Image 1 (cartoon, rainbow, N blue to C red):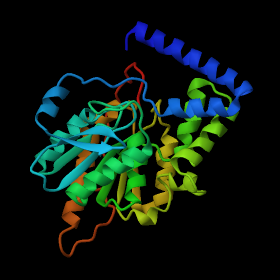
Image 2 (image 1 turned 180 degrees about the vertical axis):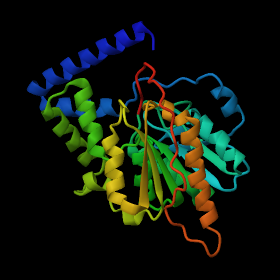
Image 3 (image 1 turned 120 degrees about the vertical axis):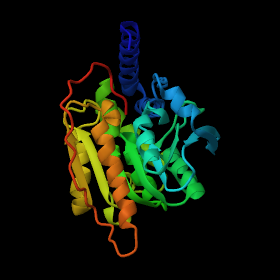
Image 4 (image 1 turned 120 degrees about the horizontal axis):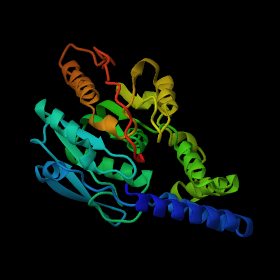
Amino acid sequence: MSPMTAFVQTVSRTALRTALNATSFLAPRLAGRAAFAVSLHPAGRSRLRPGESDLLADARIGQLTVHGKSVVTHQWGDGSRPVLLVHGWRSRAARFGAFVTALREQGYSPIAFDAPAHGASSGRDTSIVEYREIIRQLHAEHGRFEAVIAHSFGVLATFFALRDGVEARRVVGIGGVTEFGWIIDAFRTLLGLRERIARDMRGYVERIMFPGDPDIWRRLNASYRPEEIGAPVLLFHDEHDDTVPLGQSRALVRAYGEGARLVVTRGLGHRRILADPEVVAAAVDFVHQGRQHAAPGLSDEPVVRDEPVVRDAAPRPGSAVL
């Protein structure tokens, strides 16, 4: 990010904070509605990095439609043994390049998508509901996934979909969000908004996104009813993640008990953890174990043979994305 871009984003954030907080005194519900709308808009699209264009050029490109928005999908391999990759907020499918390569080497068929308002897909906003619908459509097309590998907000969306008919043998979460309410709290903290605005935002979630569902704040959490998932879970989270706190993954492990395992990394932050060779190797090995255990006579217990030794790399400057 250039100094000018950082300056513009800071000015915009300051102006937004001032406008929303001022409006909350005069028209509280209007401020909450505006903040809710802003929270659904990713602040800019993540651009392709060197090498990612070649990765996407090697994929079969597809298209889904969700709420009138065109969603671009990517598929590698021959279609057998599908593994779904779910990106986070302000990210895109191409960020999973290291996973695509490693999975293909093991005979899997990676599948990924750019959510609305992300990557090459259309739209200006999106939500966990649209993520769930995309995952459901891909599941209907490809059948049960050998695994789902998700990052950040994508982890939360993945568990929401898995409790709604989507099936996967194994789940890998990286730098994941567990509690939906944390997103609103983090948004409020980021902009410096009054608590009244956050309360009204929650009200709009209840009335607009999930009308008539009094239990939605529990149901949206990845930790809700772990017995409904039925798949072993492996989590990776950096101890100094400056975007999603480590406590989010710890909460998921507490909920799943022996059904989940957490690997804490050092110096990889929120983004570079996706490309770390040892994290990728450990995750793909975990996925492959699920395939081995699916053979007749073998159980599908949540076993990770070797905990990865992750390099202690110095964090790089730059703002992380969900």
